[in-house]
Amino acid sequence: MNRNINVSSEVSTLKRLLIHSPDSGLGKVVPSKAQDWLFEDIIHLDTMRRKEYDFYVKTLLYFLDPQIIKGKLAQIDADQNRDFFKPDSPQYFNSDKVIELQKLLAEILENDLTKMKLVAAACAIEKEWYTTHDELFNLPPAELAKTLISGTTPSGEMLFPPIPNFIFTRDIGITINDHILLNRPKKQARTREALLVQYIFYNHPIFEEVRQNLIEIPDNETLFLLPEDEAEEAQSTLEGGDVMMVAKNHLLIGISERTTIYAAKQVIKILFDKKIVDKITLVKIPNKRDYMHIDTVFTQVKRNVWVLLGSLAKPQLENDDEVLVKAGLLQSKKSEQVHIIQFRRGQEQEPRVIESLEELLTEISVYDLDCQPMDVQFIYSGNNQFPYGAREQWTDSCNLLAVKEGVVIGYDRNDKTLEAFKEAGFEAIKMEDLLQDFESGNRNPETMKDTFIMLPSAELSRARGGSHCMSMPILRGNFE
Image 1: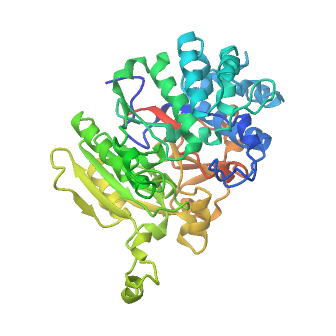
Image 2 (image 1 turned 60 degrees about the horizontal axis):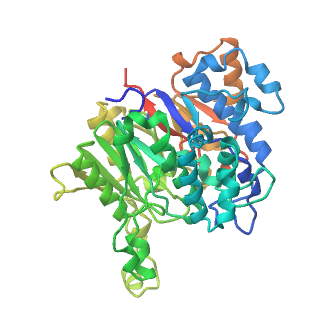
Image 3 (image 1 turned 30 degrees about the vertical axis):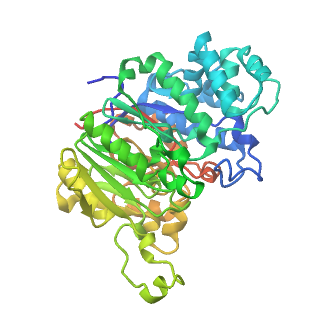
């Protein structure tokens, strides 16, 4: 078993993860292109960095790599240049546990052969000229890394479109035990980020010991022969927000707006053939922008506790007017339901249908994680009150990152969901207050239990992704 890259749980103690801090490209998203670049709104970059995401980084460091930050908080906060957070600065925190993708990219670009290949590939994707290739190749590695991510050269020229979704590192790959599944984004706007990550995984020394364990999802070989109206369903696309490693032998894959059944079938075959997991459950959610990935609908808090959207938790009562549905005058309510099917290795021809999301999550807690059925608990988005369930799910009330079992990071704006957590026995604390408590010694990350850490989110929430989206765990500990 690999000791540095291994994940077999969503909630055991987090030890290493990949992140990407908001870069200058996010500040160049314009209204006319926002939706094409998969953003819902225009963000204020400086606020997102200083008053929101920087708190996220500091909190991660306190849990994963405290010696880098403890005793230095006042000094870090006083620096108006934010050098602590900049990978090309001598004052950069440079943790090998909270790992910035831009830093890894700059490091692999020190190799001229890798640099040449990646620049050529990026120019091909973005349809740039040969002269642009030369211009980029002559940039120093740190500047080239920033340019490839932000799309803007050191001189200020906007050469490429930005890749603002790069902050959502969950979507680039998923650690499945000691393997890494490289994902295939559906939208053109994410093509360059997938390329950059592919080069990082195959060329950076951090991943050398698992290089033989990197899994690429094959494309549909006949896709180019299909007419456009049939090609979408036959695409091989999968994003990390649709994949959850809930137990050592059990993987969940969402079928969603971004992940196709074709890709899921390929992953099932590969993982079963390699005997990496024994059980894979497909969770089909409505193909709507409201949901996007399964981790916008539910995430795990403890072995026996889950947060989820109540309207999708159980099958809806059948109240369709079948005559009008058949006539095409009404859409069937069935399209708004969750459909679940489970496959076991060696029994692929005998899949099992599971009736509801609550039933699936209960089974995971009981059969995979040894909880008692009566102890399984659900916390609902918006406290299951209309209209707050849907409103707060839109701002990622169900998208939480567990830094250890029962201690989760989520947005501060989802008031009714926070009420539900408190009713379930959790403490809620603002991230800024928590950091001060850590610094003063009034709290210790190692002894914290059942806590919702409130991340400031006025700007981050505009991007339509929460703390779960903004993390790619590559190492979690075992349950005690």
